[in-house]
Length: 480
Image (cartoon, rainbow, N blue to C red; front, top):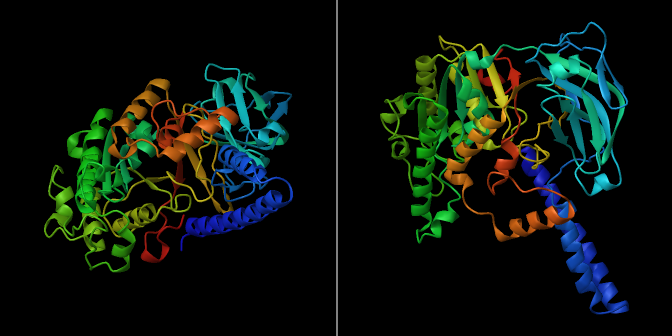
């Protein structure tokens, strides 16, 4: 069982216990006070739950985030003078450096009901970064893009529904401009590349998009067209295969650089467990990957038999790596992103690189899903992305942040809007929850579309993580 599954299981168990206790109390109130009072209290309790307690937060907001950065990372001296953040005299910052500021954030009593926000003001690019309601611990602000205003001593930090405490600590990460290198984005599913790295690949001198699976399962939306489960899954797979090839063209990626491998959704782990055994689709009644590979610009090793095997996946990836010779590979982060297909995608790339004559200079990890907080990045579309919750200070990490202009954010939103999997309307319950949260918790709906990914992914930052391919042996797959 994955860590996220364990956390969900514990969350649901605690929720059932809480509901049982509430039910007993309501029955007691109905017996001893008034029969109608439990009904009123139940409705009010449900509204309060939807407004303030429906987030999947699997840690206490009072827990400190725990990050470890490499010891050679620059730490320019800063001090917080009232609201103004000041650098020590003589300190110079590189304009495009990734800047991370650690400080303690404590919510006010209103910050238990309305999302606490830290506002960054004083320059031409004001920002807002949001944290957990009831926050009271060490957090990491993302100051990337603020180097100029910080160097001039004009950057102001202001807490809304929270206070900023303690001595701030700043880290500055200087990195090459990866947009000037050959970039390959590994997407376990159509839309993963756009969610994680549209800003990077759309500006890269040369970009490749490689999508591993057709993403054909969970096709209930298409069953509403009168299709049975198998027909709906096949239609969804064909649509998402098309999306994976066509949508990157919006960003200027040539069709010849967009590849769909057509393996089956949530089956990569089973393939990895038995590398020579074909693994069929869970819902589409298919065992031949070539059904979803027909739009590819060239033939790959897996096209010989169409078998959905781990060995075919590795052969496909090796062929693509040698053809594209990427200097930068963008792929799911081995620690932050818990989705099983994402974990296997990262491991497949590392295994494919083992002994290969071409090796990338940089691996960039992304997290489109998170173990501990399903709402991260918190806050509204267009805002900045603070560092996510992390509680393992043993493994050093290096963030890499790419600022996105407003025009680029809009282009990214349009790319996501073309993805069929993000188009279906929200279920009725989520619509009601969003309305309640808008009225009581001041949460704005996503600007560009209903799906939560329009809020999470269309931001002023794309946050990636550098990790070194120090070893690609099977025994160390997934290690940093």
